[in-house]
Image (cartoon, rainbow, N blue to C red; front, side, top):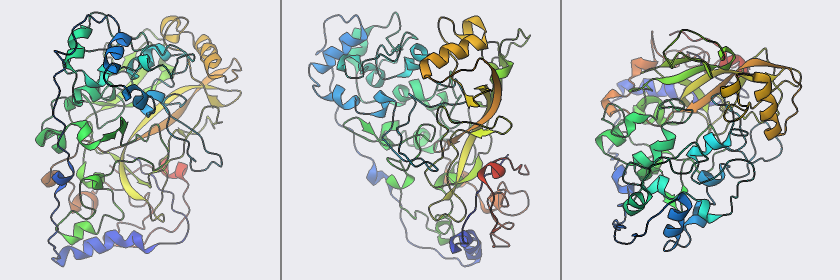
Length: 491
């Protein structure tokens, strides 16, 4: 396990908060501080049965949308203003850059399937629309909006690799009659399977959330919450953003949206809150019910190996590592992140962080957060020294031709990056903040899980001069993010 910290500036007293918290262990301080998050959960509107309202046959996705728009006049326009449609966030300044940029799934590089450009028809099978096959897609046509993927209640609606059109055989009339409030099944259709399969990307979202038990997540397993109970929407604008596609603090969904800022009845626990995220204590393990991908080496692809386990090797994708029921990694995080953008140069001898969390021990906005870190090895141009987006899917793609040079040329035609004709493979890492798989109170981390011999925190890498429960002084040295990210922690 590795830990990140980049302490800079003058020592702030806030770093002693953990010392104060431990000192209070013997104080017996308690307060009457009732936390009632149910007051924040809104009662859904009564459902309207659409089955008698929709009677004519429906042959295509756009035809279904036209039926919806017959009554819901403005809804498509609302959807078209969201990141679910544009796959872009608002314009924002990324830490370390001077000019604001607009980023999102549409134009970013990751270390899973790398990028959507040149690979649109497959990637956009999870777009909330129909027909995004290339850069000419009409984002202004309301009939391209896919209403059914979020509102189907039959459980039978699926989208094809043909740019997100309904899969062959889907009964679109039955699906349209069934529409209702989105459930975990609707959200999970895309979000549980990001990266090409169940549990691949997030580490805290997977198919176990369709019908979770309390052991998986107390909110959804015990209290039966749906995703939209927390990720509330206004005019189809949904609260919450992923660190994978955003870099600022706008539209963040916080635990305090429902819970009190100091929810504990014991002051020694509340004393942690200024330096420790709720998720750090309340999500002690990730990938509880299904293994998540932790590493992907594209450079190993193309070989005819006698390996049948697709969690270990696939000829068209390379080699993988997976892990299940593991502790997260811990880093300082203030809600912002640095971001590798298409065309940025890299040092191929070093690991490139694609979305390094911003923060440090001396940043009053930072807290210790849990993360899954996915480590990859992906194609880059070894003359221009930047990552390439290879064409993998479709005619000429790597998955059919197993020709990296051709894949790089075709991908670069779509991205507009120059390609030198020479390529290599460089290591990268991608951070996924952990928010789901919340444990019951009695399963949360206890004092000795972090403090004392065998604790899971690497205090030195986080900037402390030893365990703050016993020493209390931060290591007031200047450690770069890249150095800290490569610091090995005791297990």
